[in-house]
Length: 180
Image (tube, rainbow, N blue to C red):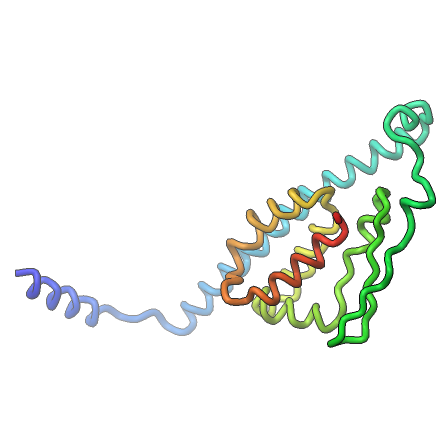
């Protein structure tokens, strides 16, 4: 009896009309719009957090007694630049700053042209807008854990990076280098 049910099911499935190319294109555009909206909302939330932190920093800068209580002023040793790392494949030199200032941490988030092209093509399915939004959002984050959480919640569900470990490892190294 199960064999006859399977044949009947296949006949019914074959009789159904397949979606048109226009319907599939519309569905693909809808999915892309949803991805963009989710990344935009995440980016807005992180930008709002960055603005709030900047406002607090600006307010506390006018009160030196608060700044003295929070942390000692940075020393010259903390602001030294590490030796440039030169990739054998490309000619771009990337430097990472090890200081504790916001500028020092965010200065390390640079993407060379070759990496950018590879990341957009391989990791973001050719969507340079998605790549730009993700990198902008990651640049505002304060910790490696926050970056990992953002990637888990907003990027991985939209982009399948399985089988692309070489590119994803390089992307992670670029993002997390400023926290080391």
